[in-house]
Amino acid sequence: MFDERSYDRRRFLRDAAAGAAAVSTAGLVAGAPARAATATTAAAAGTARSGAVSFRWWGTSGWRIDIGNRTVLVDPYLSRYDTGLFTGAFDEETPLTVRPTVIDPLVDRAENILVTHTHWDHFNDVPYIAERTGARVVGTLTAYHLGLAHGLPSGQLAPVKGGEVLDFGAYTVEVISSLHSRNGAWSMAFPGVRVSRPPKPEKISDLPEGDTLAYQLRVAGGPSVYFMGASDFAERNLVGLAPDVAMVASAATTSTADYVPRLMAALDHPKVVVPVHWDNFETPLTNPPTVAPNDRRRLDDLIAAVRKASPRSRVLVPEYHTAYHF
Image (cartoon, rainbow, N blue to C red):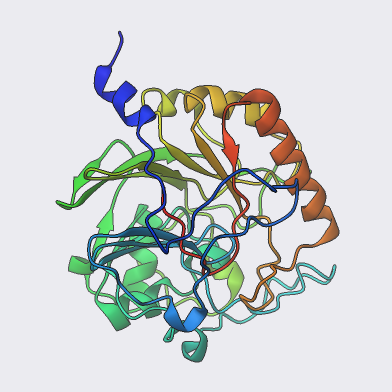
């Protein structure tokens, strides 16, 4: 059945406001970060503009979304420490590390934190940020129990499964049951869930995948934006979302069949596609982002696949801390 409301949302994509990051496809080269008309510095990342809606990429699949004077975070991982993952010496016993000197200048406030899954490169900093800001943590039952293990009160933790549409007034958040990507052996690192409160995690292997979610944030009078934290999805769960913008995780392997064509079709060919989870997330958040050679090829492959499967979609390769307006 034709949904007129969905059609109107698909047609709506606001131009950048004066002085904001005006993004166009001109000059976008596969594998090269998009340049914005005005880039914010890390120190200015907490500055609010009344009524403005901005999206700032924090590497991996992390985002800061400012809606007027309200802030939503997605998978905020800012500590970015070395586990050996990018040097061929991965150590699953690497101690969990939180770096307040990196986090505090960037996170002055947060109302909600949306967690796609609980691997360390997505969840590591969430308990600290939630404790510091009082933000609500939205995530799986595993995220709920890990939050308790870190000492967060149950009232600050919102367990979800997928299918929920949460109304926060100026914006809504739809929760989508999703899937984690597969490695070259068609498996994944640290599978498993937490069905009860565990001891406080101490090393990265104490943070399992814990099931995976995606989120669609719809701003009142503004765009609808789809966020994914890993490069797989449950195709049937995306029917009818039709986001204006899709934050799409770069595929870690070729284990997921027809990843991009199926995703673009299921999302009804978003007007803007933003590749994420392609940077070296064990290096500082400084521009230009550091990209491992294998990830550079995967990013190039993702861009090419999007342009082939959804030629009318614009591809925006983001830079850190840059305010984008859709």
